[in-house]
Image 1 (cartoon, rainbow, N blue to C red):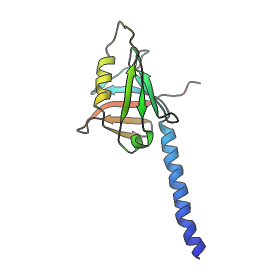
Image 2 (cartoon, rainbow, N blue to C red; image 1 turned 90 degrees about the horizontal axis):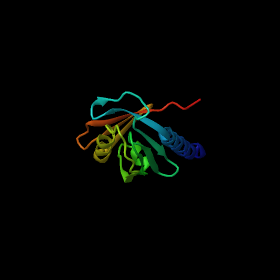
Image 3 (cartoon, rainbow, N blue to C red; image 1 turned 90 degrees about the vertical axis):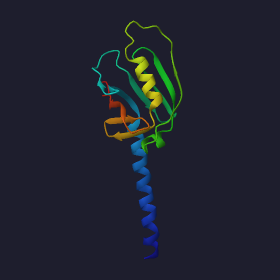
Image 4 (cartoon, rainbow, N blue to C red; image 1 turned 135 degrees about the horizontal axis):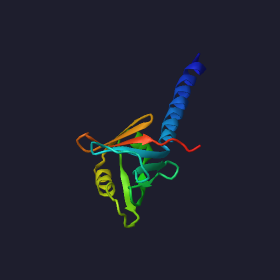
Length: 140
């Protein structure tokens, strides 16, 4: 009976760690920006997106004009604390640059995150959703 009692916590710990790992891996990949500051974004070639590389604790993406890179802690992100570090962009000149500045400003205001399956909500200090991301479908 004692062996069984010791087995239960180990069993629960194992499955809890598997669930955590699974959640982190759900974050991996690219996410399209579908709403920015309350405005829906129609998908196009210039649609901003964010990508998460959890193996490298790295964030990357596209602002609608330039490439974006930075750091993040995936475990904190999944627990609701969004911390993007060392954000940097390329500096190309673009004709139609309507998303870049609002997107970068919004990213700098993000304090919390909420991951709901195929959707991520990025919120400001007051808890207002400022960026909504939707998981990109894998190319076939």
